[in-house]
Image (tube, rainbow, N blue to C red; front, side):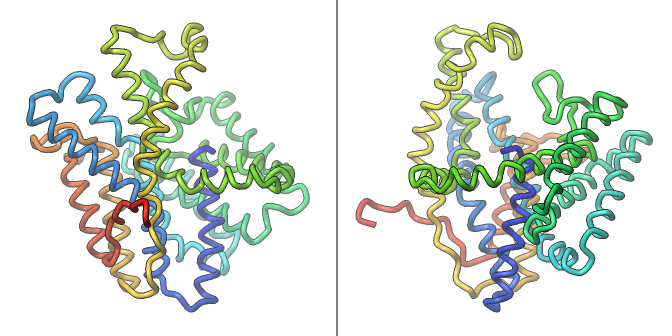
Length: 377
């Protein structure tokens, strides 16, 4: 599932969760803590393990070349967790706005997204791209509320979303050439509609969500099979571990190839496509091992109904989001050597991100990293 569809799925899940919270008389602090409990334990384990590895490598003078590159890039996928935590922060407000204003609120987000795109691409205002990092993902998340209230599942609505969304995305990219063709950046071609997000990505997200909703009925029938459903349940229970560690598995395979003096064909070439199945199978081996080793991090019990108040919990989520995003941008290379990088004109370091993340967890309080379960437990 793409990040865009995941954002809408998050909106659907948050609509259900907040409705249940109102029925049970829960607080917004409970909502924030439950979301963080679901998302961050595997992230913390990943950062803790890699920070320890980087510390050993730096002490021995071995953090250079491909090893330094791995330490720098292994945290890159965490950008989505940082952005998603910001979406979580605004979720109660946006859900309340949806119940009161409905389509008007979504229209405002779309107009804001278009305006920031114009400022960024026409007038070179880079700050507008940073603003759209929040606006576009909030708009994608808002689609999940329409899914939850049934607006997107009526009649021909899914088909219209699929055709119109994909059609507008193709028009904006291939037709008018107003936006990059790539939705996700690739090595050597970093410019894409994902970084920062823009209206072309929003259109594509609407199209993808429409396709998902069209497939919902046959997928639901397929999921009635016991084995299929159990597989989905297991996968959902380890999905954050898979997300966090998949790039580490890639670096393990790449390291083995470097030690063996082997270099795979360039990405996108005929030779690369020829070995692609072998590459996937090879990466699956260390990923399976990492999954078995670290899946315990997702076995975190639901937090008790008491704890940080809404304002304190919201501040904790905000700090955690900033911390994770900073680490995703600067990596962990040079962590203990004072290394820093410039991100959008701001000088940042990995330790700053880790400090913000830990400060956020302190504000959320009552939420420790779980002890690894024993065989008896």
